[in-house]
Length: 534
Image 1: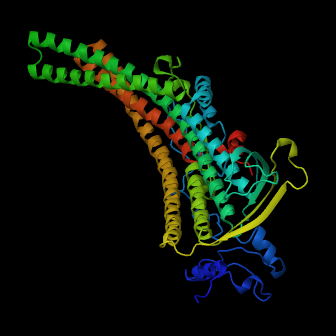
Image 2: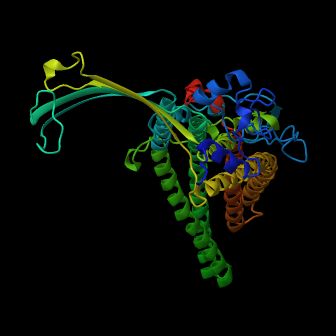
């Protein structure tokens, strides 16, 4: 005779064979000396032998690793050199900027630019942007999935009513007490089924879905942060391009006048053909620079329309000028230990790590026995009026215990895959944190270097203007030619274009800093409460 092996015994042997990764479910269930406890810190079970049996049936133990929040990076600064402030220039957008370490970021940081049209555009974008609405809908779907899975904690109760008209065989079939072979049968019944979470399968499934919900929540926060930053960056770039177009057109006018003057001088023998050819080439180069700027202006116009939830033909009428924007001078700089608690991408990676951890518990629990309790009760009668009469009732209760015995290694390899996916999530989390710190460091470097660049561009602009003024005086006194004046005017316009680009870079760097630090989304109650349904 082949000895019978109980499902619980087989499950215990299979789990112990996996190098102690799962809980041995043997005599420890009732042993007063060794109640269930953590196995290598991975499992949480009932601690008292007195309640072991009750815990086994109702809550059992929760297999799989308990997730622990990753520790904050042990670094004190973002860059090798400590930054306190940036250089100053006596031009628009040239104010010095000071870094306030540890200061909080405002939920509406864009208001520091002191532009009412910009504020209105962001309000419009937050109300109408399709990407943000899609992120909000995705969060609602994730929340409903969590609530749906939580329903597995409770019994499943269903009611049914069956009615049939049938004829039984005279030879084989039993007949009702009325000894009729053709009759109607009415059977209302209530069924109850319940699956105790013996090894925490449902617990880990809910945990995984909750972590996925948080990941979607942080994805929505990232969408919000990106949207607000893109609106600000687009407005700054639009203002910069508009000013560059004006300067470039003035430069083209100066180049055109210079070509005309050289043509006159060539006809009189005062200029060479080479001088004229060189100047025509410069005019052609300047004209070639204009179409790309116009194209970029049109694209920025269309981008702003889409960001605010409009079609390009419905783009908002606002036009920005760098002079109308105020450069924030006091910049909050979050502590490195706070960055991992603020950046949506880091928090999303952490939530993904949590979900991967819970998936290990799901894979382990799937290798263990499963218990289902069922009960049903009802009445069967030949006529509706006889239902629930004495003698027509029936009921049953039962329990089904199933355990995997042989599956070709499917469940084992799924567990190993879950553990490998967890290691992948660990590496991805670390990569995300490193990228976040790099982003902040790069932005701080840009703020510092672009401030120096603006200072140099301002000096060049001032020198070009001084040269132009002196040339005008010399021309008036007869010591300079009109050709020299037009040449210096070219230099002035080119220096102006460089200065505008340098000014715009400082505004853009400031917006990038707020985005790299998380954008202050945690200061908005609607975003903080979104997805928190626990």
